[in-house]
Structures are given as structure tokens and as C-alpha cells.
Amino acid sequence: MRTFDAVVVGSGFGGAVAACRLAERGGSVVVLERGRRWERTDFPRPGQPRARWWFQGDERGLFELRRFAGMKVIVAAGVGGGSLVYTNVQKIPPAAAFQGWPEPVSLDSLHPYYARVEEMLDPSPIPHPLVRLQAFEAAHATLGRAEGLERPPLAIRWGEGDLERANRFGALQKPCNLCGQCIFGCDRHAKNTLDLTYLKRAETLGAEVWPLCQVNRIEPRALGYEVRFRRLPDREAGKPEEETVAARRLYLAAGSLGTTELLLRARDVDATLPKLSRRLGEGWSPNGDFFAGLIGSRIPIQPTVGPSVAAGYESAPEGFYVLEGAIPPAAAEPHKTLLRLVNHLLSLRLFFSGRSDSSSPGDTPACADPESEELLRHMGVFFLMGRESSHPSTPFGTGGRLRLGPRGELELDWDARESELLFGRIRRYLAELGRGYGGWMVVPERWWAPDLGSVHPLGGCGMGRDASAGVVDAFGRVFGYENLFVCDGSIVPRALGVPPSMTIAALAEHVVENSVSG
Image 1 (tube, rainbow, N blue to C red):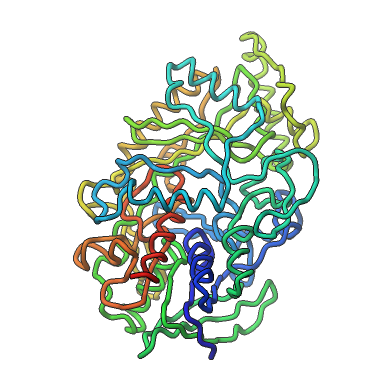
Image 2: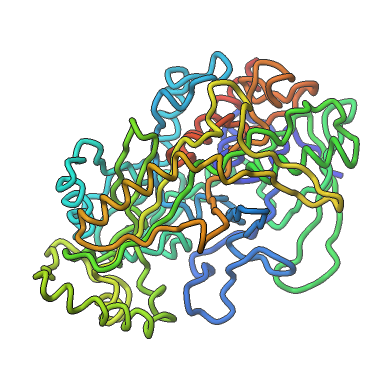
């Protein structure tokens, strides 16, 4: 059994930050990541035979789908966590999102940590004049909603051509080629993902990152913690080997579902951490995630060109945030027959309404055949999130609850009515937006899409003033246990209503700094 100064479980926006900052302090660090290390040529693509999509059974794919009653959650699996597949948006929530958080955490107190994340991930707005950008902005202007428009900073390396250069951490990257496939992993390493930034620096300083290591037991010892894990076989079936590492300090960053499940198991099954708060598992939120599509726009959108997201709209009074999205051209390949039919049915209306079909000269051709681009030209997709009713005025007033089922499996108690007020406002806005485009919105309704979905799960180990109100304190310290920290999205006590990655990273900066100096 090897011993380290610190063990970090997970390599996403919490774990990568922790590994980097701990390594900078000179201590020995190991990161245990259940997913594989993804190289540029490894990422799955639509239509690709035997593509590694799902992390399940003996497969070590890029995504894991967790099915609960009334809720489906998709999370990433790999060295770099969610940064491998997120839309690259670096967004600071409004001050209202921090209402009720335990002192001293606030928007003002986190500003120095947001600045550190910005320095590492180097985000900037898209510099290209895309057709879809102009269409999104024109539609909102038509509705009198131009005030909330923005081009959010994106953690992407911009530029022209295929010249590969090392970033300041030594990782090789090519500039973005606007292919629209960010959410499937970037085969150019144009995204400033965690494996190319925080983790790259951590490894340069001596930290070890062990992929395909599934942690299944945490146990306190006299001088720290022992962490038991299994070495997962990569694709080929085989009997996993069990190993143990030990450290004085343990940082849990396996995400809202992963960290909460680990601690539930330690408290309720293994009884190794029996003093954990009874609040464990409570306050879970899907961050108000909502998805919609647009068909038959009168103006061209050309969603096949650009990064996964290029523009946003924030409606502070209504409590939601909207991102317009790309449709990767390859996604059209398996559905061309259906797309041809849809376009044919819409063609008469679009013809008589006098639609424009001009393209901006600033656009770069997408990576697909011309037919796919044409079939998708007047379609759009939108990603929305908001502060639903798991954002109460008092901690843990409502929201979901994660727990272990009778067979030890993770279960979620979630009432869809928690989101209905928010979703009602979102549906009204989307109906307006569809009119702004001159098309029709395809919006999920309960009668044909009974299960909600989330890609931004938060909570389960929420911050609180004490163990009666939360699982960790304002510095990520687990109540009842010294040198045990949580530094991922599970400590966020309620919905943020914007992409949470930057806040999770800032919180991890905050947690780690205080854990080594406090």
C-alpha cells in the first residue's frame, strides 16, 4: 500500500483544481479517476462503429447515464471529467444565486478564486461572426430582449489553420476549426480542458493521475484515511484488482452523484464514517436543466458551424439562462431520411414566407457533406438552466434526495413539480423565441417526455453552518472528520441557474487554499 500526502478522488472541475494546487505546495498527490485517459483520436463520433459512448458494464465510454424515477442524469467519465464534454462556458452566477449560503461564502468572497480559474482556463468570447450568432441576436432583438444577450467567455483556443502549439503548461493544442463537436470531445485539443491545464500542471509538478480506478471504500485511520479502489479493465472483461492507498488528507471530487454515493456507503453500509450528517443526500438539484429545438426558421441559422455554444441570454427577473447550441453535422447522418421529410413539409411555408438563405462570409465550412449542412441550416438547439424550487430561502427546504436503495444502489427522490414554475416561464419564453426566428419550437412536454434530464447535477453534500444544516462547512470540511474535504458540485447547496463549472472550480480553489493554510 502506497502512502501520499493527499488522495484526490475524481479529476473534474473540483479534483483537477485540488490536484494542481496541492502539487504546487510540494506534497505527494495521487488522483484516482474511474474513467480512462482520452487521447485526441479516441473520442467517439456519431455513426462511428463501436464508438465508446457509454460507461457501463465492461465498457469505458465517455458518458455515463444514470436513470432514476422521473430523472435521467448524464455525466462524463475520463481524466478531465466534465471538461471533456462541456460547452466551454465560463459563467459567474448572479449574486442572488448565493443567497442563504453559509458565511463567509458569497459572490464577493469568491471573486479572487474566479480570477484564478480564469487565469488557468483562459476563456474569451468567440471572435468569429457566425450566422447562428447573428440569428440568435436578431431573434431576441425582435422580441425586445436584446438587453440580456451576451457572448460568454469560452475556454477554447481560437486561431486559424492547423498549427499545433504548446500551451503554457506544455500541452499541445490546435486552434478551433468550428466543427461543432465540443460535446463529444475535441479531437484537436482546442478546448482548454482540465487535462491540458490544471492536471497537466499537477503532473508536471509530480502528481500522479491513475485512470480506471473505481473507489469503493473510505476508512479513517490514526494518521489519515485509507481509500480502497478497483482497477477497472479497459473494454475487455476481467476480474478487477483491489488496491488501497493512504493519505493524511482526503479530497472527494467524484461529482454530485459519485461523492454522495461514496459517503452514503461509508455511513450506511460500511459504517466507516458513522458520524456523517443526516443531511447527506439532501438538497440535490438538476440545476433547472431544460433542452429545446427549433425547426423551420425563416432566417438561416447554420448550426453546423462553430463551437457547441457561441451566445447566451440571461433573464434575471425570470431566473433562467439560455445558450444557443451547435448541431454537429455528423449527427445528421443517421437521420437524413427524417430530416429530408421535415424539410420537405416545411418548404412550402418557408417559400411563401420569403425566407432568406444567405450565409455570412465569415463562416468556415463545417466538417460534413453539403447535404447534412443544408438539411440542418434552418434548425436550432437551445440549452437552458435556471434556479428552480431547490433554490429555497432556507437550506434544504426542498429539492431532491439521494439515498441508497434496498440493494445498495443509488436512488433519487425527485418530484418533477419542483421545476414546474421555472419550466412554465421557460416554455413561455421559448414560444416567444420561436416566433422571433419565424419557426416552431419543439419543447419537451410531460405527456411525451415524462422524464426530466440533467447534465449539471448539484448538491447532496451541501454546505451548511453546522451538521444540522449541511454535510460540509463553508470551507468544504466534512463535519465530524478532520482532514476530509469535499470540493465538487455536491457541496453547492442549491441551483446556480448557469453552467456551474466555473463556480465548482472556484469553490475547489477556495477549499484547497483553506485546507492547507487553516
